[in-house]
Length: 484
Image 1: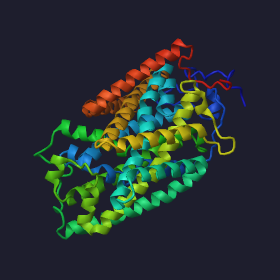
Image 2 (image 1 turned 30 degrees about the vertical axis):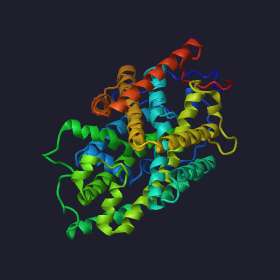
Image 3 (image 1 turned 90 degrees about the vertical axis):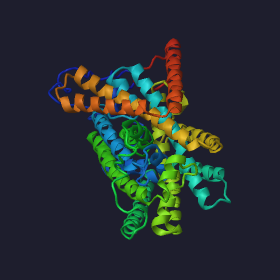
Image 4 (image 1 turned 180 degrees about the vertical axis):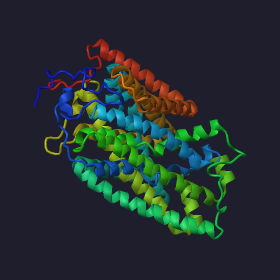
């Protein structure tokens, strides 16, 4: 194994590394050692593991928890909001696929923008997506705790929150293989609950419950406007975030680098279809859509109310419990794993404190990063639980950070493939990232003002931090330093 302190980064511009039309660099053949790193994480995940991981991260029943917010924001056209969100994420998944083949390493967009464009850009991409990755576990725990409290009001929200954090931290500590096995069990359970809701919901609509079948969840001429729908998309994309988390497991993938991209696209396609179908059915079952649009869903129970219309109190309870388990255990479990890998990758490159790059000698997981994510999630969840707008505020912040980082991802595809490698695959390496960039830019522009303001503050903090790193001799440098 080569010494990471002396192994040079590969020359990505020399012949044979992807200079032909539409070619891709032959990265991954030598693993992360080819890029100057030691292989520390355990390679044990298959394509199926990656696909399941992505689906669990996105949560097939994700709309259950934020249904009311998206319904209100879209003027009732919730299925349209999810369709547009899925389209936007499809272009982003394609760009992720290209960059994961070029650089099959942990770190996600931090690695791709850093190596695909320039090291300081990679730092800023990593910093922006940290706003997503670091906040999302806390959001998931909070939604799950609220759902459980709606079922058992005698148990406070904070008790459920602490319980979910402790449980997931223990599971992640036991290693990625154990996490993968738990993921498969949870996915089957979520799909069963979703199937039950859809079958009962469709039967209820057919027998006169709700508004019956119509196309208003996809288009309503009375309320439609691009600004309205894209504003809702900025919330709906929360359900799609997770397919990108697959890229953080690149160093634990035992198959070819192509498996990362294929798993992301497959997970996104499957989840997107399920999101559109379930929100369409639920929208037609909402007891009082006009009131929901006018007053919102402060209690976060709009979906459960719609389920109750279809099948009675038991179905409303079932969907609430499923949401709690899916968000508070399954989804937050993989979110914590993904976040710890991102912190590990940035610490390995001296962009975060060195203790975060510590890997457990036998479990082969970034143990300190995992524990830090747990602490942040707990503190953040408890604070947001005390705010009336806690879930909505966290949702918009998470999305703003992710979408901002995705913008840099699209730029990195063009810069790396067209600019550096002179690729002539105009569709994958130019058209796809440009279209994806345009859609996401419009969504970010129409995001809530609070998210834009706080996102800008986070960006400024990142720029200041990068300035400090450069001034203290720790300029962003995408390579491993074993003894730092």
